[in-house]
Length: 442
Picture 1 (tube, rainbow, N blue to C red):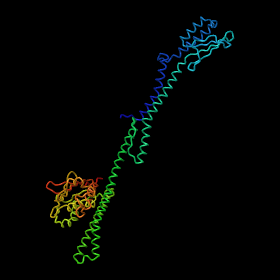
Picture 2 (picture 1 turned 90 degrees about the vertical axis):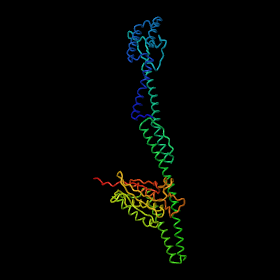
Picture 3 (picture 1 turned 45 degrees about the horizontal axis):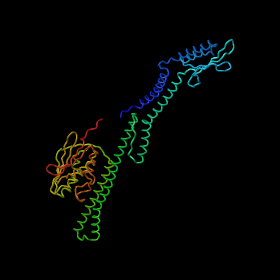
Picture 4 (picture 1 turned 180 degrees about the vertical axis):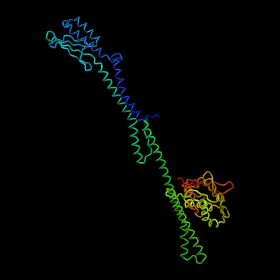
């Protein structure tokens, strides 16, 4: 809808208020005078003086029927009414259309002869400006009413609607319908209001999804914590009750307890890290980071787990300083999570390849394993919190389901991206990118 600025709207209203009374005035004037001339008042004055002169010059003929007929004809042509009264206020002559009207103007002339009052003449003539003035006032009232209606429709009503909509939103109802306006400023505010409402709807929907996701995370983590806790308590009870009655059994029981406690520690750590990345509480220390060293540290961390399954871990690509901007600790956590996921899903005697390369001012890293790869569903939900490909929630292989989610959020915090795909010859590939380090300029 085409709009006009409020300044233009105000000017149009003022012009309308000025123009309509003038149109009414001119219309009535033309209807009465059959002319667009506005100097009729001087002509009427001449006719009035001529009429009074006729009355004074014919004092002796006031009562003559012949003169009265001639004078009456003159009055009709001049559109003047006359009443002649004697000194004793007796009516001598009165024009046929004479009557006192508020819309006509009257004058009184006293006729004196030889120092004696002969009579009085009352002259009534059309007040040509009275009807025009009344028409102009009527036009102004109509214009004022129409302007007030336009002001209410296009300014007051939309503003009232916005106030009502704001109160409606405050009560939690976002289904707000605001009236339209042709005034640009009001229309802009209305459009901004609608954008705000849409933003609030999206925010509420996102908040509802986050709340649902948070409840799911709590329930799932509680489930994952319960399994190692029960196992740990069972083995500790066995030790306490003397079921492990040989050094070999006690060593086995202690090893299982240590494994379960480490698993609990990892679950809790993953949960804390996920929570920080979810609410953007993680402090990002941007420094010059050698990504090659970060990858080497992550490999060293996962080497014991890889050796347990006879998995070979090798690095290819860039050598030397592979420098990016970021937080070395968080980047190591992200790479470690990716490698841990690869180790858990690579079969015994498999191989994991970590590759580094540079392209378009970015460092590209990829982790490829020789496992079965991702299914179609896993490719869609690999970064969803607590998603695990296993049909059963086996914490020994599936972990907490937060590793890739945390890695993706850490990489995004560094201005990079993380994706998952499958290799053409088999196995999964997790590929990420990070901005290349640039020396700060003064």
